[in-house]
Length: 195
Image (tube, rainbow, N blue to C red; front, top):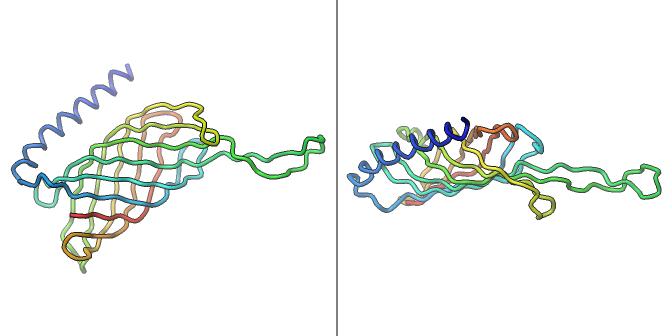
């Protein structure tokens, strides 16, 4: 039953993408607005939960005034589980730390952005995405296991234009994944777009 529910969600999302495509064609803007973000992940539900680096890249097309639709690639570090090394003599004295398990989530999503009117030279925006996340555990680069999950994200931020083609700002994004091992996390960082 859960597999059928996941397929149904993907079908509805693909239908929404097809319905938005004519808006892109009417706008005559086949050249996308490229964007990205670099920052940190935090508030991870699951183990490990320390967070880490967060990156994303997007290509967005205008579909209506103040609305754009496109695709986003994303990667977020969930953190590492660290354990203490003990001496071999059996005395139990700590002699350092070693990473046990590292977890990261990466994937691709459909994304819809809405921009508000500029205030004081800054453009506030909101963003929503729906897509696929691959969660992978590794031990110092050797993969221990991975699993897939659908999920969505919601974001809010603001950008300041730097000339006609570039805008830079900050954004915070909440990610909700539909699985029991890493259910949700947040990311925040520097956000930029290039027209």
